[in-house]
Length: 91
Image 1 (tube, one colour):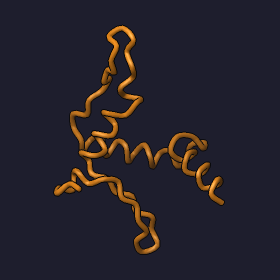
Image 2: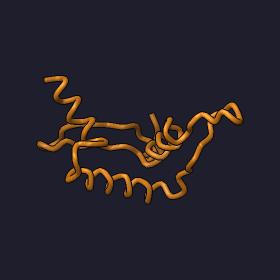
Image 3: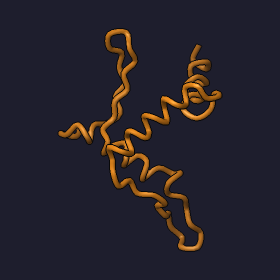
């Protein structure tokens, strides 16, 4: 476990009747940078190639938060779609 807030892993809890989701900005950036979508396999070089690097972790985290909020009004796709499909599967 990281000693800094920026390096904290994903944590999900219910606090005062609210679902609270927390993740450190370093952890969020690392997960994006090393994720499969950002590091596709390049047949030409025979290795994985990172496409994007997070330069400003706080700005990136705010953009992720905005995207999650904006998705709430969108059709059931992306995170919202995966969340609801998993909820339906469990109940």
